[in-house]
Image (cartoon, rainbow, N blue to C red; front, top):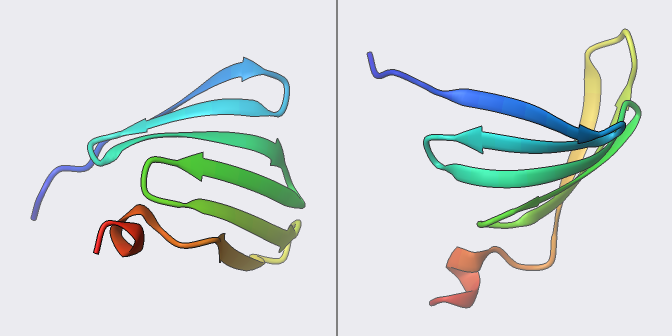
Length: 68
């Protein structure tokens, strides 16, 4: 089993800098809608608070797809 690392730093209310072993990203918003801008892709996530249900969609093509 490998080790994982994740750290989220609040910059402003509703704006977080997310750090992990895989890289970093910026999240804007919160429940129920969050936009995430990462090194690999941009993503929107919508959720129903308190239910555990969420929907997520990648916006545009990922960096991996562009680099092919």
